[in-house]
Length: 166
Image (tube, rainbow, N blue to C red; front, side, top):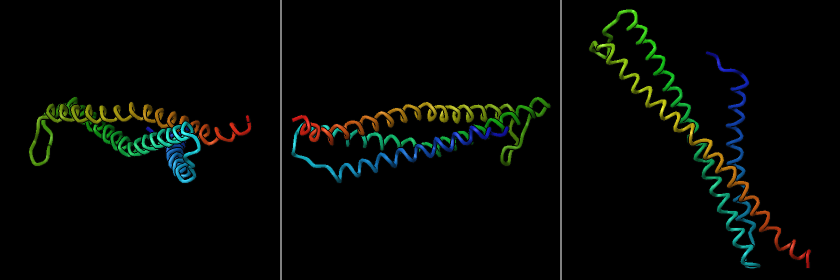
């Protein structure tokens, strides 16, 4: 069954955005660490360091998500292949076949079908596990980035705002 072009485009854009936000996070973190000025005010220093921590957490969760992308595609491919094999063997069984060639020996088709069902269930479980963890990791990445940037803005603007108020 062909994949819808809109779905394909959406998937590519989603992946590119994942790379972009992760790279942006580490870029901002690197820039923040290079341009930080400590010692002026202890609460500003604490806010600055907290911003770094949130940006670091965001980047790590982003890398973790990116690391799982190829694993998810492999799991999906494997599950789909096993599902096709299972259907093929079930069709053979429905047509009256009781034995199939398994390596060098002939094996009962019921045994092969059961083996494929087990493997397919494991592959499906792995794929679902990855798909369940990905949105959670993205949410943590996104909110840690937003909090990190917000804290960075507060820490970098606190002294100038305080100067303007006085």
